[in-house]
Amino acid sequence: MRGTQFAELSAFVAVAEHRNFTKAAAQLGVSPSTLSQTIRSFEERLGVRLLNRTTRSVALTEAGEQLFGNAQSVLDGIGKAIESVNSFRDKPIGTLRLSMPRVSAVALVGPLLPQFLAEFPEIKLEMNIDDSHSDIVGGRFDAGIRLGERIEKDMIAVRLLDRIRVMSVASPAYLERHPAPAAPEDLHAHNCVRLRWDWDGSIQPWVFENAGRRLEVPVDGSLILNDIYLVLNAVLDGIGIGYLTEFIVSKHVADGELVPLLGEWWGHFSGVYLYYPSRRQVPGALRAFIDFMRNQSLETSLLKDRSTKLS
Image (cartoon, rainbow, N blue to C red; front, side, top):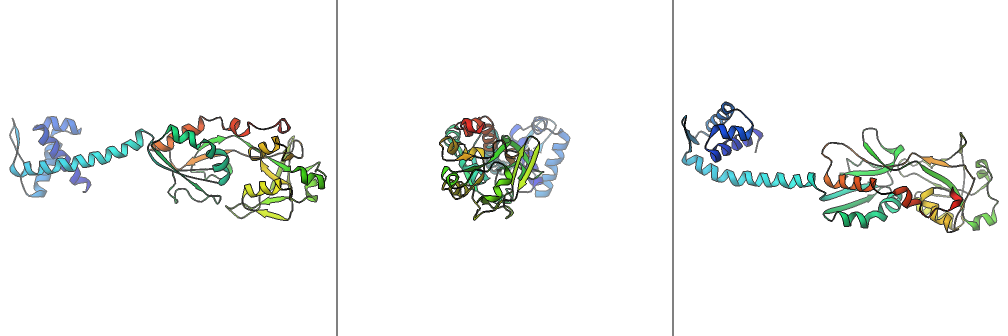
């Protein structure tokens, strides 16, 4: 149904229900003269009179009665369809599709899923693991989660985690065979387990900062992997030194499975953000997820097992 036809039919039904042009015009938010012209155009286009009207009364013709009976069910159906869409706006309901790298799914969102789904039982959540940082709009996702450095400028970003520290670590078994590096430059002499970014194929740089100094160390090693948890497992197995985010290694450091290296020399990421394409008409399910994540003490929950060695 075209826009003009829908407007004409809605105008006709309003007049038929009220049997009065003034009351119908008030309901529709138009002037009586505009409503009268709309009805006249509708009748001319159909080639049949729908209403008999005088200065005192309005009555339906036989054709008008038949159209009114059929039109009510059509408009009721449209109203129900619109109302079903409104439910997505007014309350958390429907399917929420999110795209994120594996580390965010495992360490950040995954542990909170039972609580979120219990609080919002009418939301169906679909999580897509994507380390390549593909386009969420093209993939028909409602939102994504990424490091701040990797979010396009035209996206709306909501911070979930503040600045993240990255540290060099090794297993006790590795350090039994190799002396611990005392400075970032000493990493040249070590077997370093490196990470290749899926999004552009580059190898993650090892960057360290301390007391205003910044160093990028060109490390080398016998193993390159494209999954952060494979890097973690290789470091735990004693293959070499790893360069990993603090929240991934904190529990292993607390348990004595990994040893922090290089003292106060750390790398940093700008933080983890949830991002989505527009502020307009944010779906209720997405708004609920944003509010839920912002209300969590994420830094505390991720680092609660951190030992004093990290401070």
